[in-house]
Length: 503
Ligand code: NAD
Ligand code: 6OD
Image (cartoon, rainbow, N blue to C red; front, top):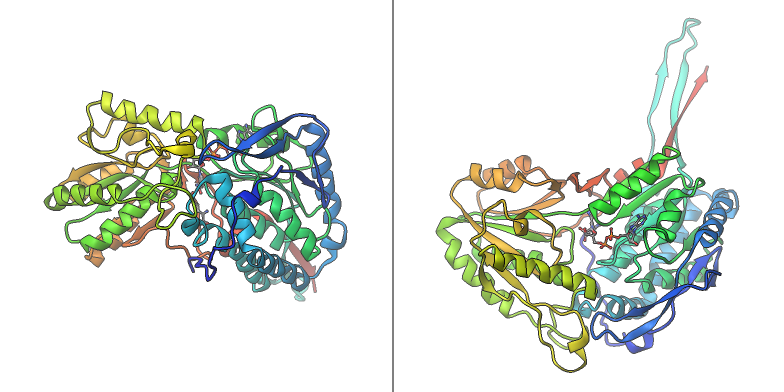
């Protein structure tokens, strides 16, 4: 059920999407009262998109109180059918305004329209529709039990909404990742306050218009913009009326949020960083493995938590694979999101570009063989002011290198030859992360064996980022806490209540 778009994107106009962002609190757009704001700039050319207000404690408090009140208003009184119909209508409205969402997302992130029209925006709609369908179909357990009087008792469980949920989201797939949490939260009857990434405020704001159009009651969906520490993000995690925090972002940020959640013993659901392995056996279908690894390394300019930064290739096909991946990397076309054939956008920000380039420099210092790339990309014209880097491949580093151990989050990978399944498994698992892996082989037994042995929340065999939204999604080790997707999301977004009736 990977989302595919039937939509052409000819009507999506980036310039028309340039606008100021606004908080969305209790059904109304507002600039808030802090008087603080920042300028949102396009990663394509650093041009001004618009102003973004920075929320403070008062805006967070207003949003949380609106969300709390909405739990006891019309939203809280809706039947499951009424609520899920409303969320299906949200999905329909996102699809109706497809080009508006597409333009906003591509302007904020710089990603190619061919990518966002295929993945980001369709998934924004699908996340509401799928969780609405899931919640309609759930049941809970019942038990009858004997009692001394012989009449027995009946136990059944009720799933109740957890309450006010804080959703803190990153910039790499802004609409997709935010709705991946807002969809199930609302389907389960909760209310939300979203603190989107400061880099990508537009689609979260636009979703407020959709909520009003569809008639979602005031206070159910709220947005407060701001930064993380000493700003809206931190204030949201500290608010005592927040009943749970769901977060996608860096592992270090997760640690800070977990510390804040400890006060009041609030539950968390975390989707964090990764340093994922792509393992290519000599018996693979070479062309399919090459296409899959190319996507997993370079898609979204390498800014995908599930992306591959460590490629391991069995020695008999190592040289051929390195040369073939080099040709693929050099064949990627960088440019404007709507230019024909563009497959690679810029990095999200000047700060992130500096981080990625610092790893490019470190790789050289450590003696890596630079197969291709290794520096900033010169784009010419206005794009020269954007955050472009070359797709990059290295070989020749030891497994202890920071290039192989730390998440870079750029369009780059290191390729290592391996000789045995045991050796590659040990390397793949020698990481503090455990998000995802892909294994490329035509040997089914090996595929099953590796899938079971790799320490990760998701293992793809002969594919990558092929998503059935009903399946458990999340990371092992420092890549996350909990699983979301299908019925698994209910574990976090609902409170199970047992009712025991003496008969
Ligand atoms: P980030 O952790 O820097 O920021 C994410 C969000 O947290 C932003 O909205 C930010 O403002 C907020 N934030 C930062 N500090 C905070 C604090 N102290 N309290 C509350 N909120 C705070 O992450 P990013 O740079 O936006 O995203 C990239 C990272 O996200 C990568 O590490 C990537 O692997 C990870 N990621 C993981 C998944 C997954 O599913 N596992 C998916 C996407 C991205
Ligand atoms: O597909 C998803 O549901 C998901 N959460 C993807 C995460 C991608 C990370 O960048």
